[in-house]
Amino acid sequence: MTVKKIFYSSMILFLALFIISCGKKIEPPKIEKYKEYKDPIYGFTIKYPEIWMQLGQPGNAQFYQSQSVKDKFISPGQPGELGNEVLVQVKNLEGKSFDEMVNEVRDEIKMSGRIDAEHQITVLDKPALKLDFTIPITTKMNMMGYKILFQVDTLVYALSFAGFGDWYNAYTSVFDTMLASFKLPEPKPKVTEGWVASNVISKYETPYFVINYPDNLNFISVDKGKFDFAISLQADRVDCSIRFDVFGAQGLSVEKVFEQNKAKYKKTSGQGEITVSGVKALFINYSVMKDIESRAYFIVKNDKVIRITMNWYNPHKDNYLPVFESIVKTIVLK
Figure 1 (cartoon, rainbow, N blue to C red):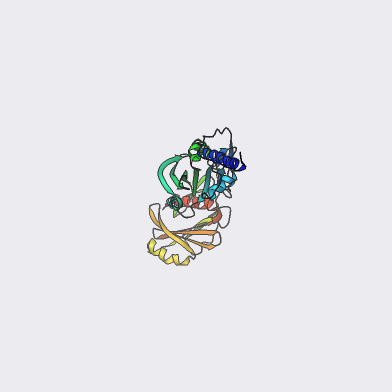
Figure 2 (figure 1 turned 90 degrees about the vertical axis):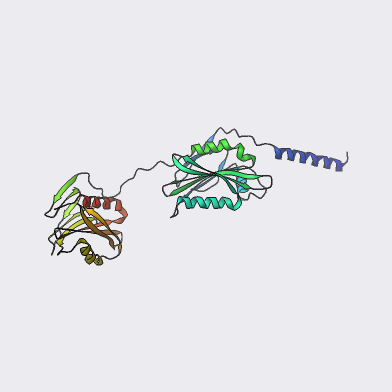
């Protein structure tokens, strides 16, 4: 046999083997061991095949059989190793709605492929949307997959499962195992910093009203000046207090009193109306210094103005404001 014939025979054998190997159906893998990935920022966990690689970043976990497979997903139209991709991505809403975020994902898919179906499902007892998609790669091969999106507080989770051609169908059980293993972080118990209101409630009575207050608020003497009455209750900081002043209404309604006084408050951030002991009360929010927020209420009863002034340290707003608001709700006017 001549060298030329040997060369042609070898080429024919190589092409035959190539065609056979290309046409071979991908068998479902027998994966016995899984590793657990825990995101260092968001705390979610998911298990993935031990022989796979995690090639993403915190908040954007990416799982593939190899770096070459990832490269193929990055440039699917280029030659490369076929395989599968699983992504777990977390994004903050940042002022957007969940529906707006979903529409962005839809648009991304439609730029290169199509959405085949949409399903309402449940993930970890949370409502979620599943988007089945197909992205044509060549005339004979597609990338197929699905994305699952759901919201937790201000975060949107997007789990994506995909594969090239037969790789997608062969790995559906692996995808199911990974999805079933996905867990959100355990909620951390809220630790309150700073001052905390006492559970022991005391009563304080004046000629004009009665209030209930936590007994770890301290009464502070104030100069009542021209007022008929003045008293202040202070928490652990001098800038965290609730003060009561009483002075003559001179026949004015609460609306007139409020209009006459609100111009005195600078850096206002809104106003509103509530009912105190069955009487209308108008209030204004304002700030006189950095990190200190304030609110002034005006009530008129028996031709007397009861002005209530709150001040609180804004970084620990949850420690103070709800307590002061609850005191106002307990007021019984005389």
